[in-house]
Amino acid sequence: MKNRRNNTVQMNGVDKAAGAALALGALNWGLVGAANFDAVRAAFGKSAARAVYGVVAGSALYAMARGRQLASR
Image 1 (cartoon, one colour):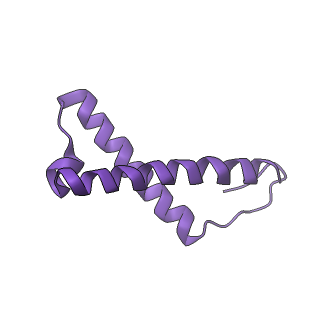
Image 2 (spheres, rainbow, N blue to C red):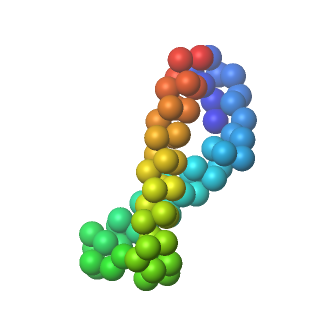
């Protein structure tokens, strides 16, 4: 990834984990919209699914903050 000044920015482990959680959430919501099927709830159960949704939401907040941080460099 490059920022505005063409300096290379390395992704750290948290960036990669947040990206994976966001991808999981995006695919899940795509399935909910297209087929009315909640894969997270089917895989983890009702109570654990809430925790997974929380991780996805936290990842989204992290990605927004990280994006702003990189954009301001």
